Length: 229
Image 1 (cartoon, rainbow, N blue to C red):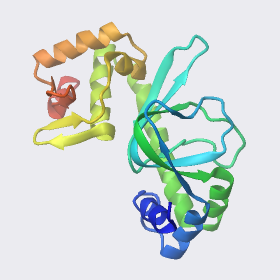
Image 2: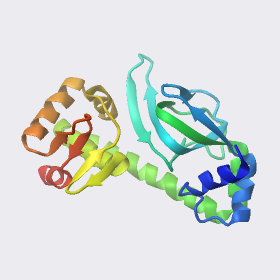
Image 3: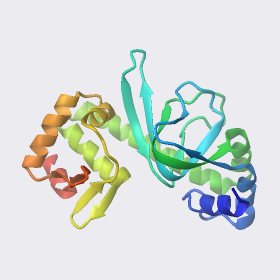
Image 4: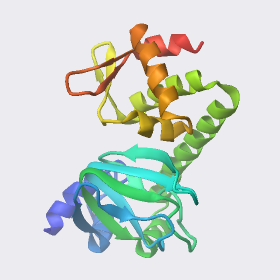
């Protein structure tokens, strides 16, 4: 890929959009792009952590597995986002699996080289730590949801979170732009597929949740917020 194309794609990443051309050129020099097909793994949990990835297009599912193979979905990332969110300035392994769920064009940067650029650019470093800080707050909120709320409320909060991370506003509703099975939704909060299915049926009866002709969820966000007050 031409340098101009890589520069254009990096400029579309929120983390880099305010950089001057000269500052961005240092990142372009060490960046590569690669197309990942559906169902390919970008990396697997436990692999040596040596690169950081930025999504130009497509979707990546981040999830962890335990010793019995049970899956815990951490997030589904879309264009403009980076991953992983751990491993900077330390030696280690990737903390989760990264699987392509929609053909993805990724920008990859060796983490050692990226760390050197961060050290020489305090503004970029601050912006990165802000992104990481937001992820920490999100994880804290999820933990609080599990401790303080019952499963019905947790599922509602999951849909509210998906409106923010994977949603698109359509008039008074939010369309969840990624297809999620009931099993995947259950794996996000550590409950059963049957519980999610039963709760979705209840929410549909209350007109808080719909599905369109393509099977995407349409969420009445205001209604869900009122349901857990």
